[in-house]
Length: 62
Image (cartoon, rainbow, N blue to C red):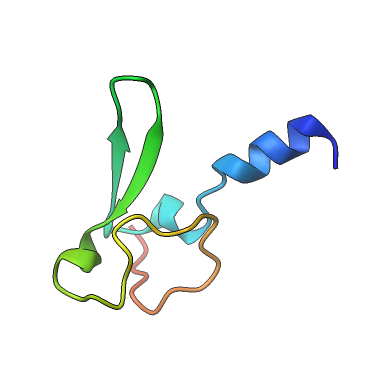
């Protein structure tokens, strides 16, 4: 796999990119995290899901 493709894949959030439950978190150091707000009320959902998310029972389009 070429390095440029690997970097694109590592930043692809999948469904999280368009989910209304997602909150984008940016750290002071420039890191970006995708917070799943469903995780606050339903323990089945991880707070910071492993990306890219391709299937999700809680997905709601924005």
